[in-house]
Length: 154
Image (tube, rainbow, N blue to C red; front, side, top):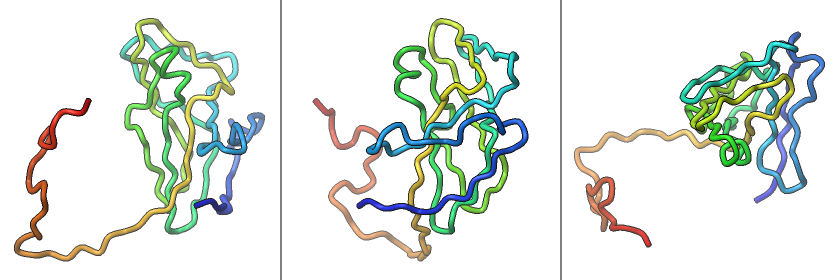
């Protein structure tokens, strides 16, 4: 399934000089999000430290869509940088600034600079459930088995 949806986007005053989020290639699923930290005020993340990084943009997702904020694989592999609540969800009715909670899980400090690509944002359709309360659930092969109940993968 391939398609496009129009995404209204506003640059906030502290993000005016930064590029808009963009896909890295024709087949990319996520738009790169940039750090809109103050110029010349780099942020050093010590190992184990987290920081809310502003992206300098806000968006208006259409109803029935969400934006998922995910880590960038290169930052994760090379520096141990991840997103604390990954994937972060941006709801269609949110109009505030997009921010990314970065976490340094590496062993060395990591320096965030203005304009650095820090995360990716995937636009995805959402289905809302209509709850139907029942007295019992239909049986399944798995039943109520929880974590590890289907065996160890190889």
